[in-house]
Image (cartoon, rainbow, N blue to C red; front, side, top):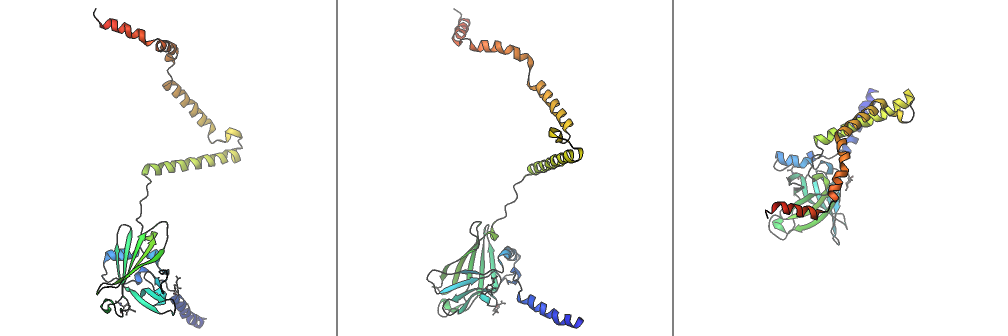
Length: 265
Ligand SMILES: *[C@@H]1O[C@H](CO)[C@@H](O)[C@H](O)[C@H]1NC(C)=O
Ligand SMILES: *[C@@H]1O[C@H](CO)[C@@H](O)[C@H](O)[C@H]1NC(C)=O
């Protein structure tokens, strides 16, 4: 029994090893700065996915992974694969990463790719991946351009739309509305619970099923009385017709009377 376990355990480990997941920890930052590390952490939801892109009429397809082996090539985060014969060129390595962050975008650099044959002073290839916030189009990966008509600083530029880099909007619920929601929830629980109790336990019928019916109807009557007292002034009621009489009197006459008063002649 023990022996078989000893035999099987490494097998499990091997299986687990084959399916090892890549995390952003697999990326090696050139600078090792804390800021860039935090920036990389934001890309965690994008790991273990193959992003592919090609330009119309192009002979290549580009494969990108966040901190993982693109196209199965070790340490390569972005590769270019020839469609015809499957030849793979390393564009950039995730063991040479830089990550720069703005308010709603991250610019990822993969450096140390295969050296150019003729262009760019035969320097190593490198990839720039612009990851921008997008809520609508999720994970749309595309090739923008290859800038290689110069001596130094050549790069392949790519774009990826993702909601992983969108700024986090803090909850807009104020303390007041949270309290209101809690009160409404309590009220709902009280009403349904009370209703069920009255109906099933007490056996009430009709409007009597309303929890604490007697108490609430009394409160209702009392507040109605209170309102009647405060809002309605009975005395004015009888005077109302008099006011109406004044209001309907022609204004012209009144005006003349007042003029007589004002003029001393
Ligand atoms: C990505 O593609 C490689 C081969 O190109 C494949 O082995 C791997 O399983 C793919 N990964 C995912 C997450 O689809
Ligand atoms: C990155 O990986 C490549 C390919 O495996 C290797 O040649 C290179 O030395 C590594 N670079 C660093 C800085 O680890």
